Length: 128
Image 1 (cartoon, rainbow, N blue to C red):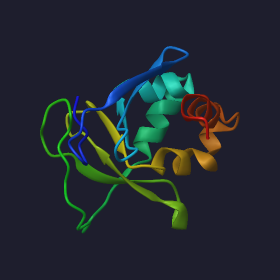
Image 2 (image 1 turned 90 degrees about the vertical axis):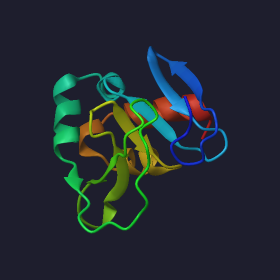
Image 3 (image 1 turned 90 degrees about the horizontal axis):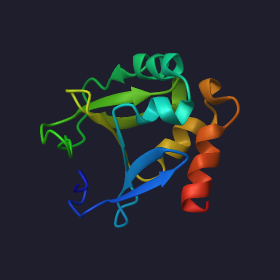
């Protein structure tokens, strides 16, 4: 699978049955549909997180292609207030794209991940 940002081949990392695709060149992360649920360990939490995304109206950032369906993804905002992060979401629900550091930023103060499972998993995968 090729990176939606820099078009380089991504590698697949697996830890605790969670697979993520990672671009070694730009540091981006692709989560297939269902991986967020596995990261959070709860389908209701995952649905609540995805349901909290809002369309990024008027965003001028270039639209990227989904690495699975190859259609242009939509820009969505994740989070609350001034800590919102702009990410890419496949319109066909194939997955989510996070530029380098965005996934960590989202989960750094997330109320839906009080036990910091995602941060621990990312630290185990990437060593930071």
